[in-house]
Image (cartoon, rainbow, N blue to C red; front, side):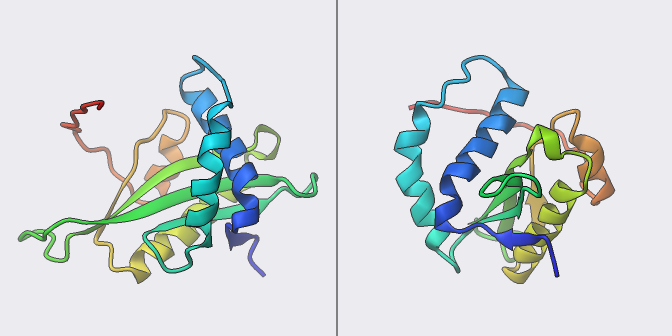
Length: 156
């Protein structure tokens, strides 16, 4: 039996907690969790969608009842195809997090495997993610390769 399962609406608060763990490890600037209250209803609704373009996979914490040990979240996006990607379906991975006291047990790898299978089942031809230096070896071991990023951003 697999440790990994699809996250449920009742996991939403724990999903946000683990997302905060990830955010704090990347740029420990604010650390505020005030935004969780506003985010929670939308996240619950998205977790309730079983066949949409959003999925989260989790592992329950082995030592803390009701807590999650690891989390991986992804979305599918469609863009009009092109010669090297005729279907135009791309997967995006984000919010990969493991509770600090549950690291080095293979939980993030197991969640990633489940998410990658979910992407395959939906026809994604490529998967994108942004990797921290600490996480890059995990992603490389799964076959991800660095790519130059011409990303630009506009905040509205």
